Each structure stands twice: as structure tokens, then as C-alpha cells.
Amino acid sequence: MKFLLAISLLLVLSACSDKVKSYEHQGVSMSSFKNVWSEVKSDPYVNLPQKKVSYFKLSKNGENIISKNAVRTLNEDADLLEPFEKLAHPNGICFKGVWKIDIENPYSGFFKKGSESLIIARASSAMSHTKSGNTRAFGFAGKLFGTMKPDFLSKTPSANFFLIDDLGGTDAEFYRDVSLTNEPSVSFTMEVVKNLAYAVKVANAFSDADKNAGIRQLYEISSLGESEEVVTPKWMKIEVASANKSKAKDFRNELKIDTAKHLIFNVFIADKMIDEKREWQRVGTITLDESVTSESCDSRLHFHHPKWRE
Image (cartoon, rainbow, N blue to C red; front, side, top):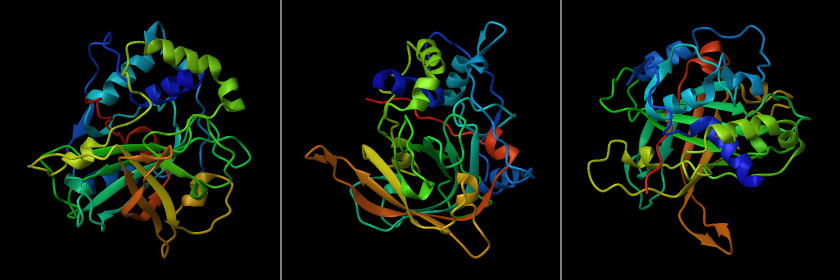
């Protein structure tokens, strides 16, 4: 069951079926940070929506929507797409800020000490629940632009990463209480039971998918701006270091950044395990200084998923 759940939920986000040969290219690649952020905040919500996932949205008129979307996610490196419906994490809040690595470590690219990059990120909740009192599986997707110049148009795609706290969800009251990693735990919860048909359909749709769906690799970060040997950590996690101690029930209101407040995450990486625990090393921070809940945040901002590399 845990394997099924891992395949189901992660593949909604990231897998690719060899049986699906094409997708519609509909995005803008290698956009400047300024252009992407301007679009993301161009259509803010007046009232927060409660978008829901559904078994019946995975296909339409005989077309396998989830397979088509998965191929696009792996092959489309655009930062912005024409409006589309997110099938697993429909409700989110977007941020801009700075990625900064301040601790010496053996990894390359933008894991190197001294690396700084503008970042656009999206925090989300899997399935349909956004408020405390419900089982929620939190996600965090980040997009590094490889520069501190907002108008700079990079000649390489942005580097994207994906973190989740627990694929089955938890009863954590606040987003700031969880750790999010690129190889999350899988708990068997009632939320899983209620959405089992959804999970099974997704698993069946991706029978030929990525054989390592339980982990999202980090080589896009370690390759960004790198001209020499690429060295990539196996694991990454983030934890809230500083935030407005809001008691809002909806995680989007909890994480909302006020004018004088920042939301800061500590960044940890690891390659080894000791006594079945990952040996985490703190290497830097993600400091977010502006947030928005918007239609473009939920339906246009696109995070490219890296294909599995041996």
C-alpha cells in the first residue's frame, strides 16, 4: 500500500510514461525573474478558493489527462504555461525571495558556499484540504534563476526542486511545524483510504513511469551555472527557521508575508545515513520577502521535474 501511495501521489507530480509520445508545448522558457513574478502576482484572489482533486478529472472524453500532464511536466522547461489545472496540489501560495548557501560543503553549482540566487517558490497542500483539523500533505516547489539580477535573462533553464513532508499527510496544525524533503515518508491515513480509487487510477496510468518515483533528484541545482564536475547531494530538506506566528487555520493565511515580515527556511543536505537516520548538514537559507495567492500561482506557474539519472 505504501508503494502504491508513493507511486500514485508522486507520479501525479512528476512521472513520465513512455507510452505517451508527445505533449503540447505551450510555455515561455528561460524567462527573467521579474517577468515571471510579475505574471504570478498579476491576478490575486479576492477570496481564497477551495479547489478539489477528483478521480473524474484524471481523464476526459477518453483522453488520459494525467499521462499527458506528466509528460509535459518532465519535458516542458517553461516557467509559465497557459492556464492548466493542477491535479494533486491545486491550492497554494507563491513567494519571491533569495536562496543563499553560507556553509562550506562538497557539492557543486548553487549548492556551493557563497551561492546566491533569486527564487520563486510555491507552498501547497496535496489533495483538497487547506485548513488545520484535516489531514494535509504539504509541498514546497522552488525555482532558482541563477542570478541576483531581476531583469537578467538566463541562457539556461531555471533549476527546480520539489519537497514534501509526508505523502499520506499528517495532522500537523501548522505548515511551520513540518520538515519537507525530496524523499518523503509515506503514512497510511484516512485521507489515503478516502482517495484510494484516485490513487489506483494514477498508479495504473503510470505503469511504465520513473522507477524511482519516491525521490526527486537535485542535480538541476548542482548543475546550474556549473562548468566543471557536477557533484549532487542525495537528500535535501527545509524547515521553517523564522516566520510570523500566525494561528490562521488555512496554511495560505498562515504563511502570508506582511510588509515587515520575512519567512525564512533553513536548508539542509545529506548523503549518508547513520543508525537509519540521514546525517543532515545545514548549508544555507531561503528567505522569502513577498507572497501572493493568485490564479497564476495556482494555474500558470510551472516547475519542471528532472528526469531520473543513474
